[in-house]
Image (cartoon, rainbow, N blue to C red):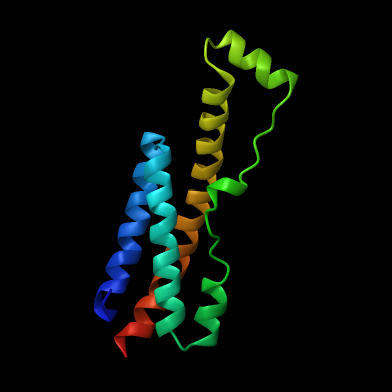
Length: 123
């Protein structure tokens, strides 16, 4: 990423987040979003010197799909039986829904600091 295009990348990440949330996404798309988020954060940490902006960027969460907890138990089994699906399909859908909540938070964080990022690279 070049310095002038980073703000465009941040805007693109927000657009991807909105699309994922609107379409309910799938795991490969969510994993790609997660990687893109990490790449943008790494770039920002490398090229931004302003401590205030860096401290804000540190509040942007990482999306680690593997750490999303799936609540299981008797209720999960009953729901999956009555919905006609398997427990694994129910778990994946729940994981996607949890990831989408985190994606919304990530997008909101970028929206809040977009102008700060833009100002850092206008110099």
